[in-house]
Image (cartoon, rainbow, N blue to C red; front, top):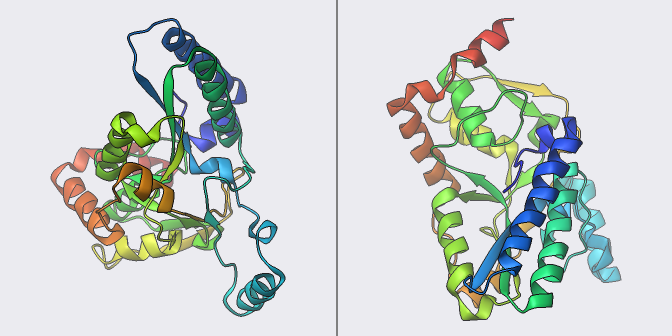
Length: 273
């Protein structure tokens, strides 16, 4: 149960509180009140990490190297470990951080098994775009390219994401539900590979060669991001994601061509207006 949209939570924080906090509490109360549930998986998000602060764990030598690389290459994306300090930069991230703590508190008190999974950037068919949202970048880019519209690169597309196909998300979540080692554990569900938003746009443009790019401002609450550390996920779940970003984008584009109504008419109309 979640209002899983950063922009919507930013615009309507009370709706985020009603759904992501009060709604989560209702679910936890119901789980805690029964002995029929063997384990609950709370779905959290990489948004709890925000932009991270890699300097906290860097040695002086690593910090110097990082500063040198950043001066030459630009921002080096942080790798987020499960024990990285949480620094959410959005209302949505705050609600997910609260949900993690509350799951541990409520279910820990009654002895019900739980696991917490932190999804990184989920994409894949049948995701479709939502008005006034900037979430789900593959769906947005593919829909706009399908309609012959330029791709909006918020913040120049420099944000880093760990793109995880929905098929892998489903398998990782199921494994967290049944794996004996996942009891009371928190694990990332990610690929461990950083991909910039601009790289995603380039992958979409390979399928729509005439697509243009348009740099746009970075929305409030949109983190610069990073990518998942996956060692704990692999050890605890005995698994790692299989779908590459290039494969996943190609699958989405093919699905969109077979399902043209998934690129909504309002998208073209709002652009014309």
